[in-house]
Amino acid sequence: MADQRPKDGSSESGGFWSDLFAPVAGFGVSFRTMFAKTQTEQYPEEKVPTQPRYHGRHQLNRHPDGLEKCIGCELCAWACPADAIYVEGADNTSEQRFSPGERYGRVYQINYLRCIFCGFCIEACPTRALTMTNEYELAGPSRAGLIYEKQDLLAPMLPGMLAPPHPMVPGTDDTAYYRGQVTHPVQEQIDWVAERRPDDPTLEQARAHVVDRASDRVKEGRAQ
Ligand code: SF4
Ligand code: SF4
Image (cartoon, rainbow, N blue to C red; front, side, top):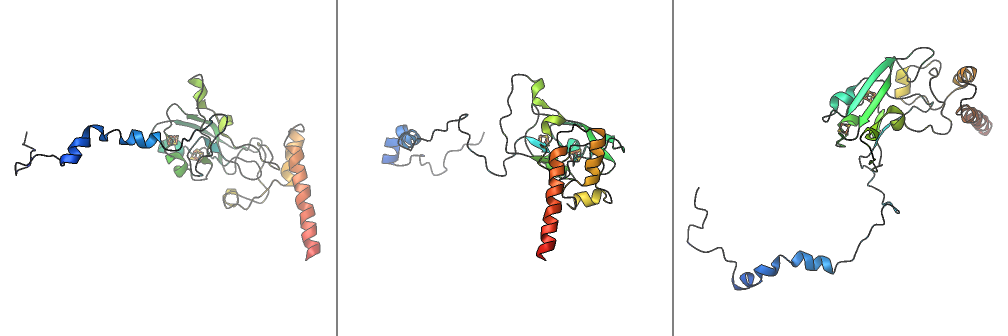
């Protein structure tokens, strides 16, 4: 191994004062910290909000009429470096439609024992179905409990949404959905669900939403 000592034969001494305090210099950080203001976070009683772009638990999003954005294409699973995602797609049918277009994600699992929260999956998703929330409390008593299923990941139904399965808004295609041209469920979809699932809990709010929008249009018409 080559000799690393200075060629001019000088020692690596930093001078008299430096050498004198060298043994205690390492305590500098300890002393500074000792007199700094204490910052105690009362977690979990008080949760400190994360930064807005924090990558936490995933979410499978919905269109405004309640249909799912996931089309079961598996691109997220292929993009995942940790092999944490498992997707099985299936065909939408006239009686079992969960998303616009041909396919939907029938099985969707994320294994949080493997996930490294890199976000590659959400970048790969072509429909913005998959995003990441700020939720970071992902611990549990069993390994099986950390494999999240589709129902654990699906976005909640917002007021006015109609639970799938149900048809798309008449006269639209999947492109119209992706362009954001569908903004709420319509009466035809509500009637379809009411005929097949009269006890569906989302029917009432969807009906109220349609009535509200109709009265808004009437008011707008009067104002013009
Ligand atoms: S965040 Fe990264 S590791 Fe986790 S599921 Fe997505 S691609 Fe895989
Ligand atoms: S979440 Fe996105 S990328 Fe993954 S299967 Fe669904 S549509 Fe495809």
